Image (tube, rainbow over all chains, first blue to last red):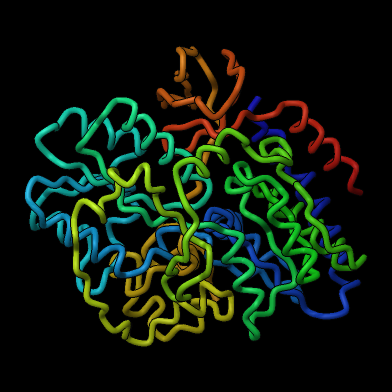
Length: 365
Length: 69
């Protein structure tokens, strides 16, 4: 029983949808609900949920796609390291097309052939064990969902005394980015659909600060279409009753305390640092870096790379505004014209979970 | 990218479990999840189980759904 057939029964969806319509008529103003997570953006697109919403409910997409928010200089650094002798770069597949300042991993692979897609950081470690004469660099990106896996891989590498495995660390944390959005004056967010699988690790408590400081309801949501619809229903109910609290809709997977073992290993291996988000800028305490005792695995310590800061003139690309939920892809003059999944200009078009890519595939004006 | 899917446990071996969904079979690291047994559903992300699917809670949610008029 995987709870897919049960959860997809049309009568259930219809009933909640009717309730959403009823609740929406009780709202005093138009509301903007942000789904933070890119996988939620995809579900909303694929199942036509955005179109289903009554006129006064606006679903906006947030910065929760780790590929999209990895800055240009992360790609530039990876490319520079790939030019060194005896190096193999390993990466999650979504990173291949992401534009750096002047090239992408895909283009560089065509030149040198030493860039490989892996499914798991453990696969990268295995490549290191099988290629002792090479240095294997894993491009470590992802939010709290992914950070413990990378931490565990580093610990295994340390136990096995593997000396030719390194990570280029670009991991980021979600709650500081949500707070950053709310602190900006011109963002207008009335409720958050919080990322389900980030919450599997961090639990419900990090969102309490958000509800208390900003008077905004938060619902941790699963990834079935009904999960999203139910989360929207809960957010509307809380907005109408002016209840600003954290509700866990994804109880079948998310525990209140999160995954303690996974949280512990993140703390054991990483320090929290300021981090640059593409299109947004530096966000305080929003990134991870290897602790001193694990710095032998840090690719930036192994290879000194001088990256020039290139000007970020991206031909009128508005991905930054889109990541903050201030604009939609339809507001962009490049969207669907010169910017498309085959030729992405900005980061939101690159990853299949980016807002622009999801809109390109599923949403029509 | 935080995509994770429920996969069924077929066999457990120390820190790893053999899991499947449809015709896809994989060996995943289970060091973050306790008491993994054959027949459990694990939430799998990039080669690791990050949590177990809680059957009781899943049924609870279904009940809540049925209560909404």
